[in-house]
Image (cartoon, rainbow, N blue to C red; front, side, top):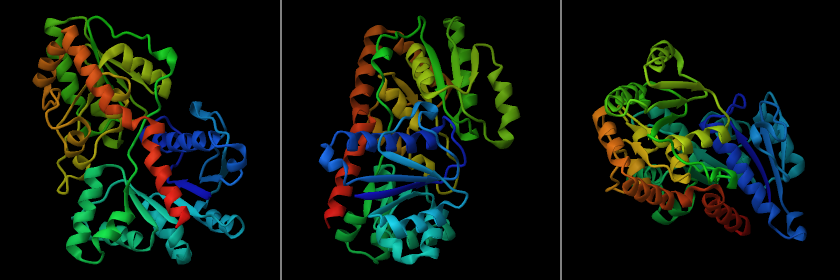
Length: 373
């Protein structure tokens, strides 16, 4: 099996989409490493990116994935396919998938497309997604709700049979690396701290979190809110920086993936808020990858009730929150060691399927099935 991967990344940074892509590659690298030597020879895993990736960057090491830098990745992939004869070309990035089809439509049957977001109310986006879906071998969505939503949309259009949609629409969830053994002995602080990790955007509730820590500290004056982030989006920087100076808030800036995991464990309570006011409300069909990070570490997470979060945590998850007072109320509940342990075990059990090696298994099985077809 010969696969070429491409993700529309600009540079390597310890942030969601970058980490997700490299965690996927490393999980596949481990799959190949586990095969008998005689079988490993039948696999070729290439990755073409617009920046130079060196083995070990960001803590990611590979045995069986070869990386190639190109200022024009799609052109490079097309040229490499002429000699490597790839079985599959995996692309994350709608524009890049369209470019591949524009330049060489005959590669459509090899195309595995990862659809991150789409907007049912945007005709331009849907025309492009539908074109990719028509010509691609398979289209992967990152959540069951988003996959089911697109399946229903296509059924209503009547262009595909139910059986064809079942085959072409797949789910490749976001996932996280399992904690190292060295992390397992880290205990949460006393009193518990909150942590908000990930890119800072207006809809991700930094203001709600900072208001919550103000309320919490009235009763628990030593409690803190740790904020770890690779970047702050655009014009929100000035406002966000002001909030990060709130008493009780600790601004850590950018940290590596493993340093962030240690901070999550030490803090004890994760926060992942999503307030979506767009017409399509597409992000609410998804979830933030930081939710999976907390779950994988067994750290209770306070999060908003979105369709994606309900799919992850269950409709009756006790720690759904809406505002700062909800967060303060749940903080008090989690201060009870018995309830904290109950929630820790619950999120950990729900998060097992999103550990990298578990989550990639269905993708691996799908590749094997399509290869034999």
